[in-house]
Amino acid sequence: MDCKEKTSNVYYPAVWISDVHLGYKDCQAHYLLDFLNRIDCGTLYLVGDIVDLWSMKRQFYWHQSHYEVLACIQRKAQSGTRVIYIPGNHDETFRYYVNNTLFGVEVHQQYIHTTAANKRFLLIHGDDFDSATRYNKFISLVGDAGYDLLLFLNRWTNRTRRLFGGHYWSLASWIKARVHKAREAIEAFENAAIYEAKRQGVDGIICGHIHHPQLKVVDGIVYCNDGDWIENCTALVENDNGRIELIHWSEKQTILESADISDIQTTQSAA
Image 1 (cartoon, rainbow, N blue to C red):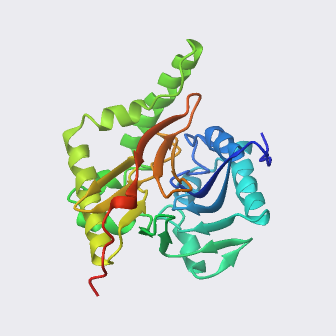
Image 2 (image 1 turned 180 degrees about the vertical axis):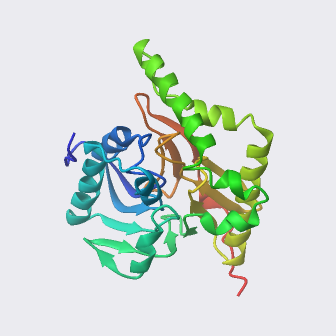
C-alpha cells in the first residue's frame, strides 16, 4: 500500500513516532503505513530508531512495506510537511548528520517543540538515560535473545488472534507490565527523563526508546513516550488546541491517553 494524499485525512499540527525498527522482522510497518496514509500534519517528528541498523548487521531483512514507509515519509516532506528526525541508538549512524538536511528531512540531536498551548517540550530519543537506570540491560533489550523470544511469542499470539477475528494485541507489553524488574526499569527511565526536562527548564519531554507508551504529569512536568511500532503500534499527536493524545493504531484505533496541558504552569528555565 503506497502513501497517498487523502482529502479526508485527519489533520494534526504535530505527530510523533519512534522505534519503528525498519529492517527488523517484527516491525509492524503495515500498521504504520496505514496510520501515515490516514493523517496529515504540520510537523512529523521521527524520535529515533526509525531504521534498525543493528538488526540488519546481524541478519539483513527488508520487507516491501518497510520501503513504502520511508517513501511515504519522504513524500510528506516533499508535499509541505516539516519532517524532523532525531536519530536513536539503533540508527545512531545518522547522528553524523545532525544539523543537516537529508532528502528534505531535518536531522537534530534534540529539539524543542512549542505547542499551540505555548508549552515547550524537549524531544529526545532516550538512550541518554540508560546510564541513569539500574537495569540498563533490560532497557537495551532490542536485539537480545530474551527480547527476540518475547516477540516470537507476540507474533504467534497475534497470528492466532487474527484467525479468530481478533485485533492486534501486545502480549510482549502485557508480560513486561507484570515483571517487577521491568516495571522498576521503566520507572527509573521515566524519572531520569523528567529530571532532564526540569534541568532544561521545559514544560514536558517527549521520547521513545523503551517501547512503553505513556502520557502523564509528574511534578508539573508532562512526560510523554510515543511507544513503538513493534509491540504497541502507538503515536503521539497534538490537536489544534494543544491537547496531546496517545493513539494506539491497529485494526482498532484507540485513544489511550489524552492530556489538556493548557493549565500546566509554564516551567521557568533553571539557567
